Length: 70
Image (cartoon, rainbow, N blue to C red; front, side, top):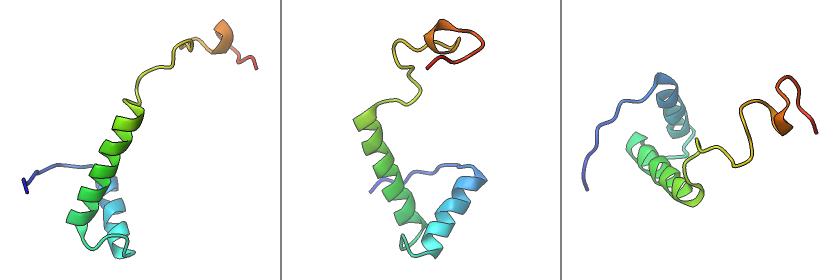
């Protein structure tokens, strides 16, 4: 299996360590592999999360700049 080296933010490392401590994963390697695999599957299913929904604009809902209309 290929090896990959990554650098992640401290808060993610802490979350992974907590999951391992709680017994959700056997070790960090298993945790990172499973979480990465799950993330890739979710990405393939839903696509990129930063795409804007058609019809929604940055200037508020329904074209009003300073208030939201429901």
